[in-house]
Image 1 (tube, rainbow, N blue to C red):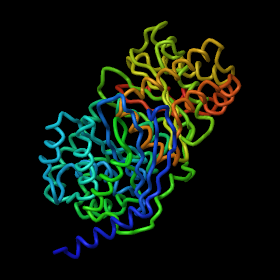
Image 2: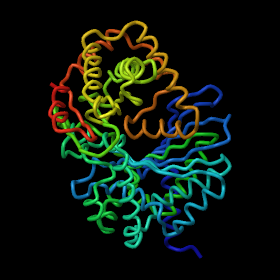
Image 3: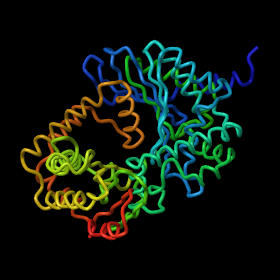
Length: 459
């Protein structure tokens, strides 16, 4: 005898099969590198990249929610929820979840960022159905029990403490606050001790229901896989959880610009009894959709992207003022950051800042030399390809591309865009970005006179 719920599931399954839309986004030679996308009527997107030459597969689910979606009182809720989805479902305990993947030699993890969250498992290709079932079960069937919230609170507070014990990590949170203030982008992804202690199971459940609807999710899978099989397995897992409550629902679009206000010329100092002073000097950067991001990538690589970069050579190789010095960019939907990090003896802070400031000013006025352009383009092309040599990196690329841009770009197209960057484009973006007034974040045991002079670096 067929139950009413079984009939409902069968009806949903039939409707899903009838109107699911599949596209080939990138056509690879002999199937290798082919990227396909299926959109189910409930709004769930499934993107895959096929690599028949490997014996592994990485399966991930990306959620269109990050710490910038939190109110001040909910700061840390996205990351808290990431932890809780591993604590048990209607079908599996926390031990069942971890042991299922461990038993096949796989690995499973998750990460939370300011604009998205990702849960993933990497397994042998033969064990992909298991990975799909486990990860989908976590995303659709989490219980979020009050006792689990209480237990995990302690683990998260320890994670916050661990971050605060690492000033080379903590200084980037301080710099984000320096640039964005109390805006959501300026608050830490982990939350604070006060906000984490104030979060309740009920509030986290409401946050979960709001942001983990299929329309907010992108499934990504890369490796020795068959797209149609992945779609069938994912669809079955979501139907089992009755996740497709709304039919003919479109996925939400990538984030649009909010015109987040950023500050300039601000200095924040966090006094700590550390052996080194940890410094981030930076300014507003580019949004991730800005066409100038390719030129910015070349500029960033030449400035602080490796051992031959300007900052590494000037600060470390020639003067020995720091062991670690690099530059970086962070792009969000509507804005971005460019920053230079250095860790040095407290007595050398002002020398390091002066050299970094001089190099940024020089490049802003003069651009890069031909040799620097050539090295940066070659380094960026090589690191792009080498960074995509495993199925986990490929899953990250296609999942993030679908969620953040709503489109896919082949590796050849990416390499072509990098190679096409001209000296004039780099000079232009250097003038626009590096010519801005900088802001500064410092963690260390600086004396009062040293701290008072920090404003000179951003004047």
